[in-house]
Structures are given as structure tokens and as C-alpha cells.
Image 1 (cartoon, rainbow, N blue to C red):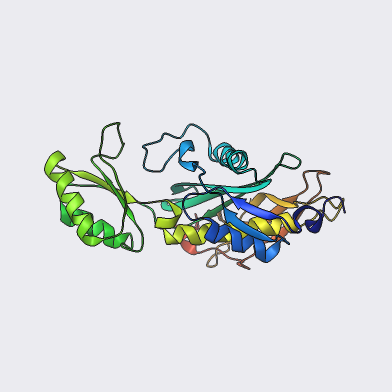
Image 2: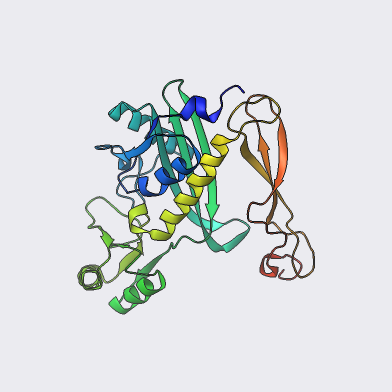
Length: 288
């Protein structure tokens, strides 16, 4: 075995580059699978410098680049040699654009040999949305659909934040939400309300990050059956999951392909959830 899980991870502390509480999701998932000694959030790390969901800091890198930058920044400011970071993106789900999806990218940076490991996970359960509102009633109706107050909200005058605009983040109190919305609508005639996508303000996203971290740790613990190198990772998928009603192939994933970055060996495996058919709603034959 070239680099087994014990050789790289045993007894080490995982430092997590976050100011949004992600250590609560990532740390336990890694410790369940890898022989790490402990985990902690890096104090005084500024991950918002790489962009914010609310737009007050513009994003200039793609999610993987930003995630790697976060992890390296975490190592630089803390001196930690094993750092994890994550980055989320939200938008239409390509196989079914009427659904929204959460794409989480996680990176593990090992400063001992400057090695970068990464993982991508897509989920549909994260609560996410935004709406232009001209009344407080519309804001409150949106809040109810977005599972407020458990899921926090953000308010600003318009959809795209501009320098000088007021910006209210982390709204979890109904009275404060109403007061802020009333003020914005009185001043601008309308306001923009959206879900606060920071992990600590969005419990469904935090759950997805935990799931992604578990899958990532599982990949890091796997070694290639051909050469013994670590990180026998999922590198691609095969679509064509058959419709449960008519058997027609859909865009749904029917298998995952694992591959080795060292020797190129690859192998297919079934979906981890055991699903063998797709919902007819996603079938191009039953629901063209």
C-alpha cells in the first residue's frame, strides 16, 4: 500500500477553515472514518474574503479554486498542516431545471506534501430561494415557504447588492424581519428577500455538508485495488437510471465510476442509496 489511511492521517488534527460553524458538520464526519486525533475550527480565519452569497464581497474564482484558496489560507494563518474547507453553489438542477440544487465542494489540503484532495456533492434538499417583494405580507409568505425562522433570511433593497446599500443578514426573528422589511419598502418601494445560505443559518445546507464530508472521508479512506494508492475517488457517473413506470432511460445516475489518480484504474459501482429506478416525473417518455 502506497499511502494507507493510517500512514497519512493517524493522530493528526484536522483544522477547518470556516467562520460559519461548518466544523460541526465536517469534523465528526471525518473522525468517524479516518484515524484523526481531533478537529477544530481555525480562529481568526477570514473565508468571506473569497466571496459572499449576499454579494457584498464579489466572487472571482470558481468553487473549486475558491475552496483550495480557503484551505491554503487557513493553513497560512494557523500553521495547521491538515486543513479542510468547503464552498457551496446554488441554482437549477441540470436534469430537472425546475428544481434547485446545492453543489458542495470540499477540499482537504495536506501541507506536509502540498497535496490537495477534493470532492463534489450535489443535493436537492437544501432550502434555497429569493424573491422581489413589494409588501411585508409577501416577505412573510416567502419566509414561511423557506422554513423561517429555522432558516435565516437576508434583506436588501434589490436583488443585486451595490456599494452603499443596506444589507441585513442572519434574520431569524419575525418581529425584526417585519421591521426591516417595512423600512426597506418605505424607502425603496420594494425589497429583495432571500435565504441566508451561510451554513450556520441554513440547517438543511449544514446537513448536506455533513453528508458530503462523510462521502469525502470515505473516498480518502479507500485505496486503489490495482496499485494501492489512496483516494480511489468517484470521478464520473453513468446516467440512464430506468423509469420505474416504463423502463425508459432517464438522466438519473445509475452508476458511479471510481478511478485512481496514480495508475488510472477505474471501476463502476452501484448507487450508494440502492435506488434502481427513477421517478416517472423525470422520465422523458412519461413526462416529455
